[in-house]
Image (cartoon, rainbow, N blue to C red; front, top):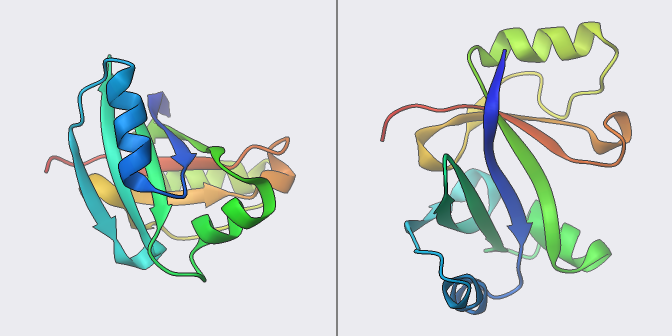
Amino acid sequence: MIKRISHIGIAVRDLDEGIAFYQKLGLTLEGTEEVPSQKVKVAFFPVGDTRIELLAPTADDSPIAGFLEKKGEGIQHIAFAVDDLPEQLEKAQEEGIRLIDKEPRPGAHNAEIAFLHPKSSLGVLIEFCKEHSH
């Protein structure tokens, strides 16, 4: 079951510039983390019970580098916190939704993550995440 919006992922070319901008808005940087499996460095800003997640590529072949090349900076994905990630993926597949990930993989904040293909979700990259304590 989807519990809430976990975070909104925003692709940026320069993480330091992105951090500075969101700090100008009055948000407090919670921290940064590198996710080697995604070839990305992320910065988190809590907003209520959700987060803004800035994503900057750490390699030219990173999915975020590809996104920036095609679409430029901006919202890259919406992540929904779920109770049971494998069950949520199974339900999506049963509904005919195309999955990028058939199995959960490690994500930032010690979470397990999986993505739905945007061609099956009205052009929006959707992430399901099972959050764990740090």
